[in-house]
Length: 224
Image (tube, rainbow, N blue to C red; front, side, top):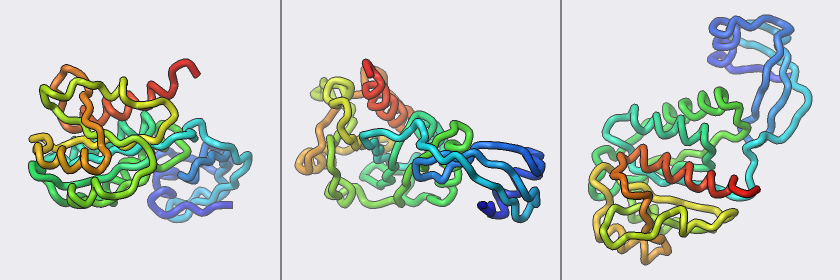
């Protein structure tokens, strides 16, 4: 048996109009799915019986992390978080750099966007999201896998899709609207990040992050 918090209970009973005996899918956000049956349909404290625990289809042998500078308009960052969760991502790291237009973030609101996205896309894992840190601190944090920094520069000709190795953990840095400064890229390279291009198109921050996310996921699904 599991009791849902008031917000989820109200959504089940008032919005979805679920009644006792209705069946649905439940996730614990940690990689498992369950069959659920509503046994108490109360808008403040709904209760369900869970059976048939099974791993979700989104359990993967590799991890994907995107580090992104929050956009000036929160809606754009929220759009990225929703779509990245649907595509498949393990962690989002927020940072502030030289050209950042936003240096604080409502992480709890962002987490709610991701929770909504895993429910709609029937994911079993809720991605982690970390609060904003300074870029200089971010690039020095440990990471076991391939590290990339997406940078728009004439000298950066290697594509992410050519440098990323299938099955490897990946961390991709996506800069703010004004991109990274040359000094920031230099610091990232000194800390093991490889500069890559995401293609010929000039992309907005949230679009670039989605392209990076989808690229890594698509490579891992090819010729399985």
